Length: 229
Ligand code: ADP
Ligand code: ADP
Image (tube, rainbow, N blue to C red; front, side, top):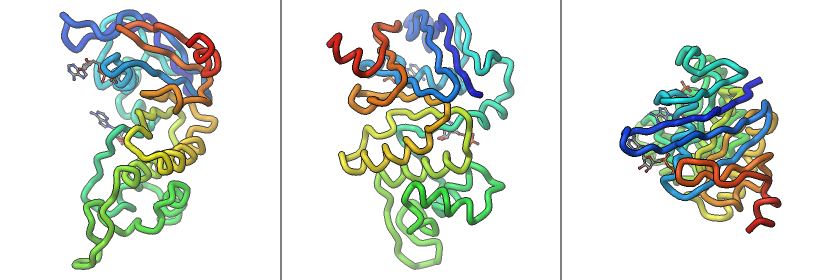
C-alpha cells in the first residue's frame, strides 16, 4: 500500500509566481522515485504538498487512490515518514527524540531502531552536548548524527510512505555512504519519494524525474538519463 499519484499538479506560494505548472507522476507502492533538478525547482515543495502543509491549486494528489484533501492530517502524518534535510531535535535525550516517531514504542524497540541507525551508543545523551545525567558531559551531535536520529525515528515509526529530502547532501562521503546504507534498509519495500540534488545519489531509484521550470523536463532510470546526457 501507499501508492502515490501526482496528477497535473499546479501550485504557487505567490499567485504571481507559479512553482509547479502541471506535474504528473506516480510512485507505485513499494517503489522509489527520485526527484532531481536545480535548486528552487520545487522539489521540496512536492513533499510539502504530499504532507499537505499546503493545498494545491489545480490537479490532484492521491495516496492509494484517495485524495490527500480527504484524509485527516492525523492519518496523513501517520502514513508518511519524513527524513528532512535539516533535522531539528527536541532538547531531550536522543532516546526521547527517537521515540517521538512512535510514542508507544518500548525501550527495546527504541534501542533496536538506534542500533540500525548506528547511534545506540549515545541514546541517553542530549543533542546539544550534555548527558541526561546532570553535570556529565556528552557528545555534541554532528549533522550526520542528527540525521541518524531522524532515520531511527522513522525506522521506529515504520510508515508505508517515506520522504527523504536531500537526506545525504550535507555529509562527507564516508558518512554519506553509511547513512545511505541505513536509508536503503528503511526504504526497502516502502513507497519512497527521494528529493535529491545530484543524480549520483539516486542510482537505485526505480524512476528519476527531472524537474525544471515547474515541469517535468526528463524522466527515466539512472542509466537512461546518463545515456541522454
Ligand atoms: P527545491 O527543493 O527544488 O530547491 P523548493 O520547493 O524549496 O525548491 O522551492 C521552490 C521555490 O519556491 C523557490 O523559489 C523558493 O524560494 C520558493 N518557496 C519555497 N518555500 C516558500 C514559501 N514558504 N513561500 C514562498 N516561496 C517559497
Ligand atoms: P509525526 O508525524 O511523527 O507525529 P510530525 O508530523 O511533527 O511528526 O512531523 C513529521 C516529520 O515532518 C518530521 O520529521 C518533521 O521534522 C517534519 N516536519 C514537521 N513539520 C514540518 C514543516 N512545517 N516543514 C517541514 N517539515 C516538517
